[in-house]
Amino acid sequence: MRGSLVLSIVALSTLVSGAAGAPTQQAPRVLVFTKTTGFRHSSIPVALRAVRQLAGQSGLAVDATEDARQFTPRNLARYRAVVFLLTSGDVLDAAQQAAFERYIRGGGGYAGVHSAADTEPDWDWYGTLLGTHFRIHPQIQQAVVNVTNRTHPSSVGLPRRWTRVDEWYSFTKNPRPTVRVVATLDERTYSPGEGAMGADHPIAWAHTFEGGRAWYTAGGHSEESYREPLFRKHLIGGIRWAGGLTPPVLGRTTSKVRGGLLTVAVRYRSCIPCSGTLRTTVRGRRHTSRLRLDGTVGRGRAQMPPGRWAYELSLTDPLTGLTGRVRRSLTVR
Image 1 (tube, helix red, strand yellow):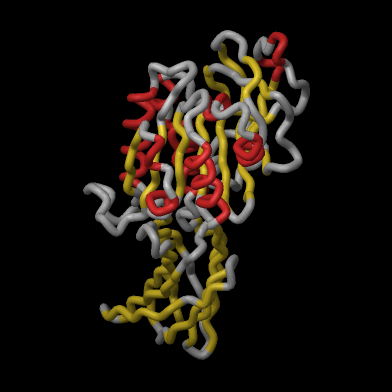
Image 2 (image 1 turned 30 degrees about the vertical axis):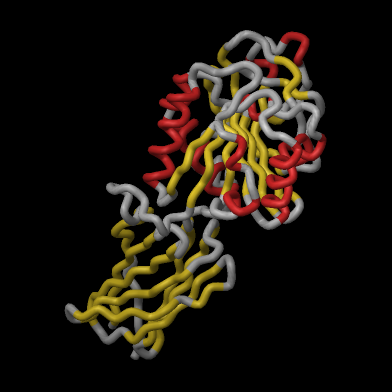
């Protein structure tokens, strides 16, 4: 039998399982830490509400604390990531620091937001985890952020030149090349003052570190930041990456039919670990088979008799239930 395809895109969507309700006890957990011993941002309550909302929508459960006694090996082992949300100053004692180091070396994740870079200035290990330390900032003003890496989960969907208002940090040193820079500041678009770092001024980055993961964004000073759709997208993408929990992103799909056998392939990213299925609907009956995944491409096969039928490719992050789907229709002759 000779087959020819008439392909049409019906939908491409990312669905969140259980997004309308609270996370179950089995949901991956993140610990949000907001202790301050230095400057305290008035935006902390708004920032915390935003993180709770975003995490709940993406399949995560959140515990929030300002109690550094939560930093024990046994308690930290419960969490996929620890978020230092607007922390400042010396927030952990020696035993708590040791527990956090052990947690990261065991594969844990760290996400730092804004003044997390103004935290633990004398703890060298923390500075290496984060990538650098805060030095100075000018007055709050508008600037252009150059999103230089648009494939990282914290930058997917952001514009290449992202104009926003914030308190723009400069740092004691450039964290490059030990980190993967996601975004830089265009110093020509604002007044950096004595904090100017020049043409390469990283403002958001990520890296793997001693067995764990670390992500940082210098944005997030004001309450308004946590109401910005793009900043919220940036924030939850970074937190999820730190926790090793990124939703599957489906790309180009190809298919062919020979002898009544449908063969499909779909490119994907941001889905480790991941499971995939191929579902076909023929004469009102649904058939499901597994996709073979190699980390970048999923492949599957199914029998398709003559007629006009539909199939669906889906990839699921089993840790959160986040699923990406592509539906297609085809004509087999």
